[in-house]
Image 1 (cartoon, rainbow, N blue to C red):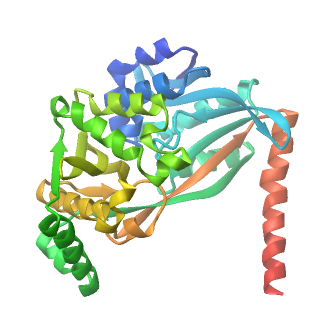
Image 2: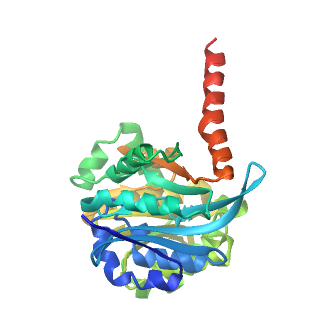
Image 3: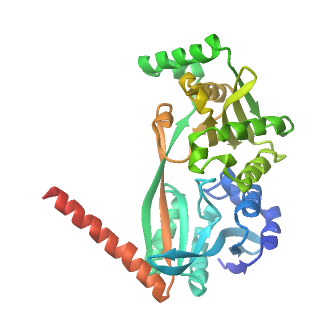
Length: 367
């Protein structure tokens, strides 16, 4: 099979791929909302400014079969300025993937060959890769055969819950202590305090005012003090507002209101039967009422009652996620090294020296 490879160097050229994009990613393992054309276009508008976009595109005739959307920017590593490339992903996505049509995995050879012929980069970071994707395994095998230097670092273990059966059966299957905890917290917040839970699925025209309620709650969380909340800067607010107001109506917005005031929210996307948790938060002044916990329970009940197939908690595993999950998605960080001196130095440190150091530490600990 003959493939053609091209390197696109403008955001406008990415926009021109929109007509082919939906069909393309439907044949990729990484078919999730964070690789849709809409998500990537908004992501670039909000987070890509000031950097250079490049897209390595592979076609089989006219059909798009592989695409690596890359952002290029310098980064300081080990005291040196490194020319770094990365996929269009950050902590607002927490899920990535090599975009390659599963029927055309062989085209990865052309993509890697073309990538290695470009001499203006030192490291290429592919972050937040689900470890179980077959295309990622095929890429690593190809890199070995091609003698391309790379390192793989374990990353997140994101909890998930496969939604099967009905809510009553699922709830009855929880431990007695967990059921009692849920009932106690629901009674305290809803029955005693009079709080209400509202879930708004896929209706962008109803979201306007409620989004601002979410941003206000976000400003009252510990994440805001740490600089990681939605409301921490205008680019984030703009990003999540545009995603929510998209005409595809994929947003599921859940809120807890008490005495006319929103005290907790959860911001999710529903895509092809999977509910992805992107952001959540609660007003620290109401921590003792467990509004975030109660909201999660009510949202899970809604998911069981509305034919959701999977609840994907995203991000790193934490106790509040693990309580209502049945498996995890392991992620890894793949770093590919170029052919220059800086690349060789970086690989020597990360691919050789650091593993040796960890091995020595383990040996000493066992001694």
